[in-house]
Image (cartoon, rainbow, N blue to C red; front, side, top):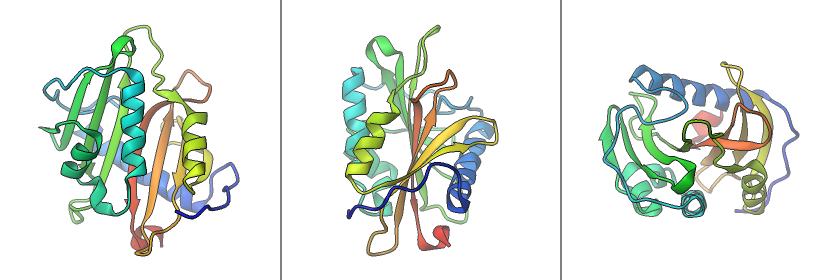
Length: 206
């Protein structure tokens, strides 16, 4: 992707629209019995144990492989990230041990019933009791995505008072914009707790 200029920190209309989409996804997940932000709704069979750096590498592998909306389909996500997905409520999910950092969770779901092919992928860390839910520092994601031509909109407030940062790719030839949303841990500081990924069509961007 070609480099794009950095979007100034703070919310704008486009960021607020995307943030609202992610809020609706979270609300839908909660409606199926999930406790946000840890997903999925129902426990999937235990996946392979991973070390934190392995999990982070697989997250970047998924992000770096985004070329079309089909890359967020459950079967393709499973292939790219190297995990088996299992039906868990309305989602397809995987989870497993994450060394001393608790557990990892991956889920793929769709928000709009009238648009069943529009998928969202989510990835998170589920910390042990007493641990902070820090997947990895926001700076690491910021630098990686900036090098891949993503622009940033930071400090976007959620309906629940939380904060996230949105990273947007340059449009593809088909007008697809990939949006990576980094949910920050509630303890403060620039620490990622969860990541969600969308492929926005020109209709979404309008």
